[in-house]
Length: 308
Image (cartoon, rainbow, N blue to C red; front, side):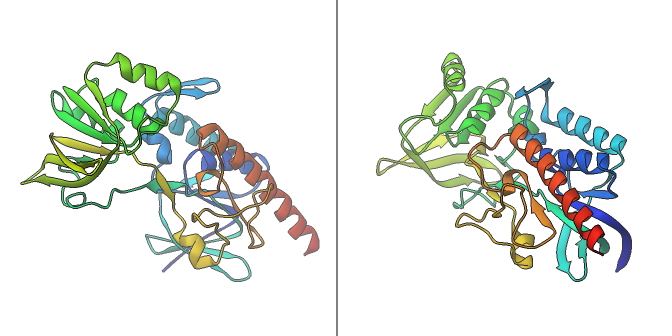
């Protein structure tokens, strides 16, 4: 096991909350490390961002700009996955590379991961027609027939992006109307190659070497769609395995419970972004919470230093 450096603050997650926290923490003069597998996190799945103040472009571009700003402020960024957290006199963070870093405070911004359908054929055809990233894989289905499962904003964005490449896009949703912004519904109606299939639940995915068919249950009857790909856009679940191991308090849905200062039930640990329960899961909200968590961590560290 390789012993790493000691920091005032370690931030877990490199999405908008983590990078924003890194910027603010560094500007407070803290020695800060931001750890995350992918710079940008879930932002990387957004092909176009139109509602982040002062920015218009892809999620990958926004993540890169945030990372550059965090580095310029003095934060260290390291592409690693945290595999464990231990609390002794301070906090020990172990990575997937068997390194150990120490910090006096931690901000957890690990966000969420894509929810799965959990139906027959989903795992079998992952990467062979089943995808969770329209931004990554839409160009692979040029001239093909695909389905997008879900009915919220992320579903609409995915369907609109894929429609630029695919011959036909079915949006499969369990309710009788889409649960997304009015603007997006209007945009979907403008695209003749997008068809919404309501009151439908995916039952299984068939094929030989790749996806060939999606079987759905529609009002008690089975219906089959011959297609080449399936994009799953049914929401996300919080990434809280580390939080559970550490004993952080979670709500009934698995989100970390934090107060207005974004402090958790464990002294010295803060949480921000989509891993914390909030009604508006947007990048601008996550970035704001990252800033708040960094300010709270700074106050905590300053108070701790004065008492020592």
